[in-house]
Picture 1: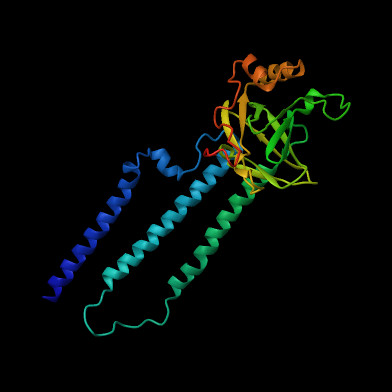
Picture 2: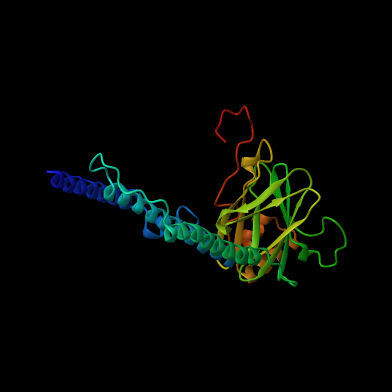
Length: 296
């Protein structure tokens, strides 16, 4: 009778576990996710820079490794629940210690930490690397509560402030930052008032913009397209409205764009002249009037 009850309980536990696994597998299907979407865990997948590919691979690998450890631990828990469930009032044999298991539980976390530290250090070093002679330079100036993008190469003589062409955003205009593809671009960040943070989600990267300190970073964008940009630092009342757009074009189109700007065209006019949409396509201006009665 006891054996029969034990066998029935075991079958019930296996059925419960099977249902749980099946439901877990159905979640991405019912959510309409593809396999790649499911294993991206909600991360952007365009990955337009080598650095974003490295960071994506690291974090997805870390998530999968953590999930594997979790499944292993959950499996041990369920196995213990089923294997060592109470069968009688008699206490099982008490074990004071198990040296192999204790060594495993002590060494394994250090191995996991060492592997994560290694990949973190290697990728972080590569992300922060700045070459001696970048192909292009762009200055990012953040202010309350918008952006200015200037192109120092349009002022080769450095004759004075204001000579490089620049794109300035305002409440009615989303600034478009035009960059070339397949070239190293050195970005220099400047702020005159409060702390901001330059963030393009698809780059999987953001860096603070701080008054009195010029931060720099370098990327090479390999895919043409439009990428939404945001401020990732809570900088004040209109922080959520500091959107911009990064527009990646070919090197030839980039040179033509700068030439049109030097000739006096506005950013929308120069974009249209090289066959691009004149205004931002990934985001739009917000209503900054508090009493307008419209959602912003």
